[in-house]
View 1 (cartoon, rainbow, N blue to C red):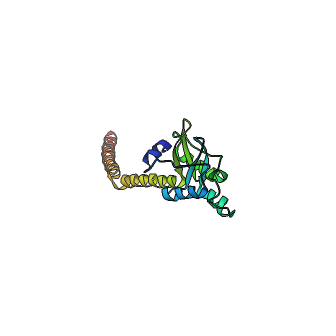
View 2: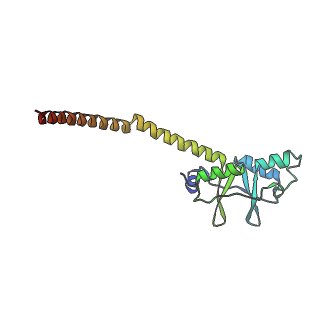
View 3: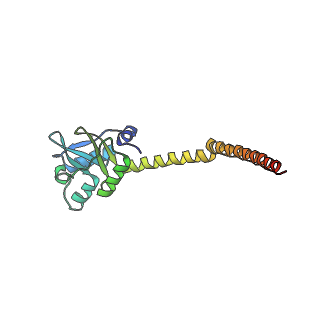
Length: 176
């Protein structure tokens, strides 16, 4: 199992993008589009106040016919932020995201946000782990692992055949 810390080290970018709670939702969406991310940490007075996602925008601005230019991020952000620590596993992240139907988890240690994990990141990681396992199994089946086992089986068969022949001779000699 991969820890969140290991996973974060493998990400191409470890930058966590944020926005102030008083900024407009339009500005938040522009940052998300430019940075190609689906969520931003929302800061207020230098601390994490919440998280804003594309889902928040779709449900709380578009569907409610509100103006993204005049609505502050603080009005639509999610304040009950689920998060993980670097010691937790990617499997735990998947379980948490599935259970709470969320797509982004900030990674927090010592009160500081040090990373962000998305469901897309985790799926990509899971696929990578499965591909590695498949390659290892294929190597075992087709590579040295299988041949070594096959050679060992052949050697054992020869030993058993020799033992069986000598046992038969010994048993035959005892009954003469």
